[in-house]
Length: 248
Ligand code: FPP
Image 1 (cartoon, rainbow, N blue to C red):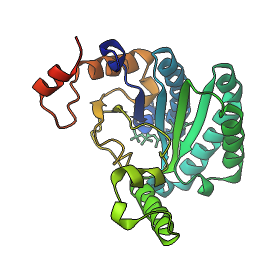
Image 2: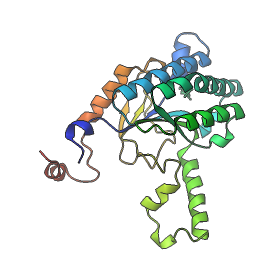
Image 3: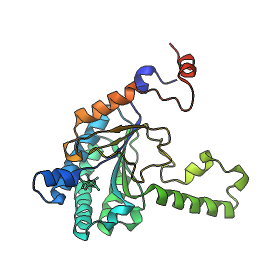
């Protein structure tokens, strides 16, 4: 059984990185400068997550809806992503960080896919800490893709419709081999989920912080984790039931 001390550290933290544009606007800079600073924060927070003892960190880097932004911003984000992957490969290997993605990465530019595949292959043996980049991700798209794959499995006789359950269906999600997020953080003061991990977050705790993503620091991550540590996760039970079940 998990000890009370270790259960105060969430195994899996997922972050909706928001506020790059506002950070730039406040300084009279183009939006892309906010994204550039946002990439620095991705580095800082990836390190911080490892140092604070997380096992999995998921970052919502590009949603299926983000393609509708101005084309120069989309192009710049893809350029930044490719630059980041090239630059971080050595650090991933040195710090034993496994890189994973969720989302329809097959629709990303070829250069980004090439670096993603290379980094994923180079880090696949690492087991202590996993960075998951949600790229061209949308929860409703994911559920549609999973339903299609599940339907194909039924047609192939690999699944029995009468045995359908969440436990069986979840194996067709992009996150099949990942734990559910324990804590979901959104920066920049917005309090929406924006199509992020809708099913996997069913029992997650939420922390919303006004800090804009480029300013989000290791201390801010530690503060969100401390807030998580004060919450009682009941999974539908009563507080009294939990007290009885928890060993002294
Ligand atoms: C939200 O800020 C941020 C994004 C849509 C993109 C997040 C991308 C990065 C942090 C950089 C690239 C990522 C990696 C992993 C290299 P916003 O533009 O919506 O901000 P606003 O709401 O203030 O306009």
